[in-house]
Length: 418
Image 1: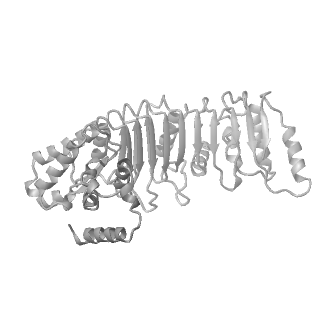
Image 2 (image 1 turned 180 degrees about the horizontal axis):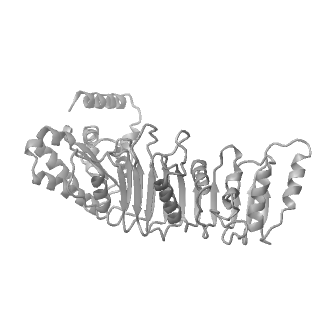
Image 3 (image 1 turned 45 degrees about the vertical axis):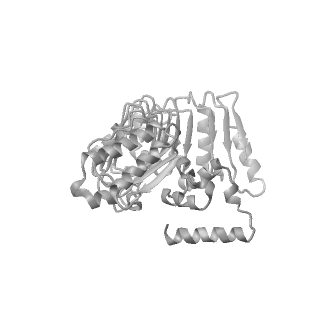
């Protein structure tokens, strides 16, 4: 036992001699196991000296957090992991964290296929035991990945060897349903390809490195994908294949444009990419869109026709500086042809049921036009909710009178003022 463990034991024993309640020892084993689950396994094992009833409780903890550095030599490391997985072999594991990166660095010259087989065997074992959180750090570049039971994956600042290494990881998860990626600026992936026949939900969070000059691409080929969230300003190109199942979208993207690098109408490849992206998502029913994305699309709409989102029933759009005009402005070009992201001024909104405008109104003409746009064109609109800003005297009542004069296409529409 090391000095720290001895001092902790001594402190506990002296506490008992003073007659204080040893409440920790009186906790039920099930609760103790949950407490110990938050400790490294080496510290959990040390607790066996604190109480005669804790001798083997570490074997019942539903998780392992272990590193090769905790052992004097390799065989002891392998033996301990095997023994732990042999205890309560039918029970479910919550966590399995294994770090043998130092081991590979130390013994790289004699690392064998047998050693790889040990790690593969351990991973397969914990997957069969329906592990909830799997963390393996080995510092290697595997030739293949097989995670046949993984349905949910969260990759936080993960660095890959190259584009292919990321593709191999995703292809090795045949039943993956939910994927979240929080990117690092140095993840070594320039062409991020997400190809999955089982994926239902995908969230991508960019690294927000303004100094990044690479033309990064994100390609998504997931025919069952229903929910897509993209928060990624630095990615230059988005490619969406097989989007027929897409229902919900939340997008905050700029296609690597910025206040310094504006949308260039003469950049035909960029225009083609944005056109194909919008066509790919035009079948969604629910969409949230940031002011950054809205402005890029607005600038694009001044030179090309936008697709109509005919299935859209819920739209949440953020506007900077009360720039309401960007949304109804989609319905016009200099030639007055309707090119709206929503059906244009000559068309109704056949699917829109609810509108909630979060920013308070301040009686601008563009705000009233927006209210008119929704009320006059929404066939089945059930509820429009708006908020009022600070008004003086009779200004508020005057605005409400103007709102009441706006015709409503939907006879059941309710206007709620907060």
